[in-house]
Image 1: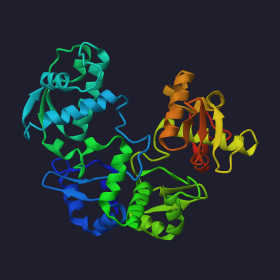
Image 2: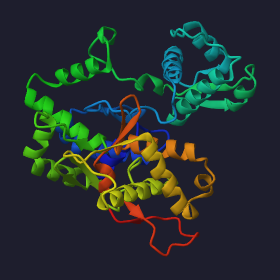
Image 3: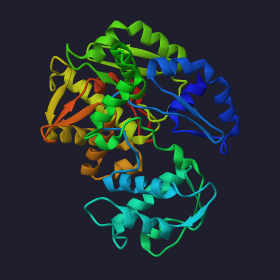
Image 4: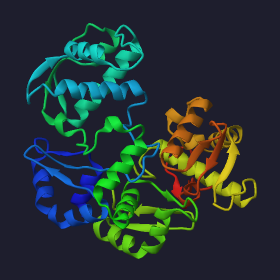
Length: 385
């Protein structure tokens, strides 16, 4: 069901931006509404301005968050921007200095906001661009990039009124929560008092939202549910998303068909995705020849130095087929990019205070390489996973 895929793949669908899509989803939402509510505990928000599927994860994971944000201050700035927009009506205009004054006066962190600092201005620019990209604000005159060079630069914005739908409405007082785990627990307890329903919806959320669900041992209730209800989950995923559901001894995942074009799936049409495919192939070959030995759970623990050596070997062997950006990238930066990308997709995790790396089973599931006779003009990896 293409419309369900679109709802899952986008934060929301704004009527003003695409009326045909808005009405198409609205008209056919009844065909998957029961699946969403019963199996995932998800609800569709529909009003004259937008349609939004509130996608709550079954389990918080390190890759979750706003892609362009890499600092806590940026998330704090976003929350303050949402507070600022609460008092702004639809199409109401305001200038950048109003935002900077509001943030400076209300920022709750220990570090004082100082707009003479370039990094603080850069954090705000990222937040403003995110808000504009998602449709909460519009720039009517000026460019926030000028703010990076001059703290006195002005930009004229207007509110679209959509910011009021950005945050979830919690049924609990989140000030009583000490960590994200408290929010997770309350989210699921609000669904139903029946533990079976709680587990079912948690598992379905993880299947739909996560790159992979790993088996955490014989006492893992989620993986036990997956093994017991495998056929049911397979049928649901095929019927509603057109995806196959692969279950192995130590991991389960959705596998999209070639006709699917979801955002943020692996492999994707990015140079780093091809490089990670090749890194995975190198790992698979190292296992075959005995250089790497998996544990019983199919994970492999290696030192950072060993991982760095593998990445250097990969670069020396394949970089002639890479894009210019990655051919010329310093080795340290390349290693960081590879590790960050693999961590985001559950292919590795850092352990022992980031002194070691645990390579996860998914790295051996999807691998790719260039053909033996590839030349410098060939930049697409051959999938052998």
